[in-house]
Length: 333
Length: 301
Image 1: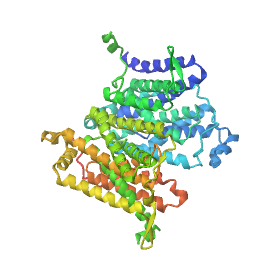
Image 2: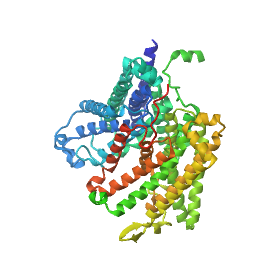
Image 3: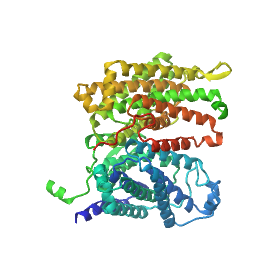
């Protein structure tokens, strides 16, 4: 029963967000779709960071690779020469549908994470942090200048915008279910054991290295899928898949609570909600009859300050890093 | 001979050495704070950026050079101390991941404040531009700032070495970097040691701000961001535990990146970050504890 709760709570939140998004105007809806894509990215981060306790700055690389894969494959063949003049021949020839492009995005993300993980998962602590950062730098640099596999410095325009509210919600749910299944599996439990006490886990015969590699691959797969969803939402370029996105998604995870699936979803929704509200407020809006009109740019500042405040007051995140549990709520009432 | 083989000019070599020297200062600034707080300060680059904006404003207002440099120091030191009080202190003893993300938040906060205040195009700090002109030394043209950077960095490092090796507070800082708990038990005042480390680290950031603005007078909100990322990698490569290994790591990565930038043909030099960070990963795999670190004990149970 309690294990069902753990899955249901994030699912209910995502469905609620999607339903709420269905009631608003088309321009506001974009914020909801963007939020749901962020949920996918943050849950992908949780699969590795949350279960292993190792920080990774490199996951946006897999998001970027997924976005590049899905983008390159779905730009209509006739428009490819315009935005990607130097595209490799074998890529210029092929165009796939929406669903195929998402699956391939996930596969590319997972494969890249596996290959990168083989050497990197031997590291931990600061060395792992810097090495994953190095992966982000390399991916960003290569995607930016290697024009045989994508638009390079250009923006990925003309990608069919198939990520509407429904596709974003289904994508987020798929990612959540896979993350849940992994966390409940033998592998997820073993990895959490290495997080809690690496020496004890080793002593009972767990290979920290292979458990981390499994989680890294799955989390790269999910990140690739999220990247595919993202490129079908809005025209991306390399700068949109770099430091800012790394920062905001990591912040969402930490604010929500790193060690739980519930925390990842709550963090993504809470920070996105605030960020979107401020973005709207920058254009002028009214809440309960009070006119709010913030100067442009306040948004990042408010989010940054709140992030620091949450970290100082509740270092283990809004959810305390625990899964949703109805019993805790009953006691309080 | 090596120089001739790799087809590197003396000019490139001098510039690479100067870049290494500046990066060494940044590395030691980051390393000192890490030593006492176990905190990797991602916001270090934004401290430098703030100092650079102070210089740009001073030159816009027509202040004399010394006043501009004074303002730069004041701004950077005030920000470092403020950061320590408002963010580092409440977070002391938290998990490294939490502290790291908190400094990430501070970094982006400062950057967006700068973006709001000065706009994405930034400002130009022109008062020290004359240092960018070359002088000719035995047939080789070297920019004055290259020499200034080398001299200043050497002096800073020497002063720092004297402080760490010859004074009580320096001894306490080294002891705290080794084992903060034991140091406190032996009567080292935590707040004092941390305060001094933060101040020195801030002063170094101000020095770096002055030298980087001379080399690149256009100050934008993402000023020094790239440099900080590279230096952070260098610090970890060198070994974070001791100031000397952090310094060497910073110097090496600056030198390597300057040399690669000069030696690579133009069509390959856009991939400079890739070469650099592949090297970073390879070195981390071979020596996870750092190139110049002392061999570390396995994690204790």
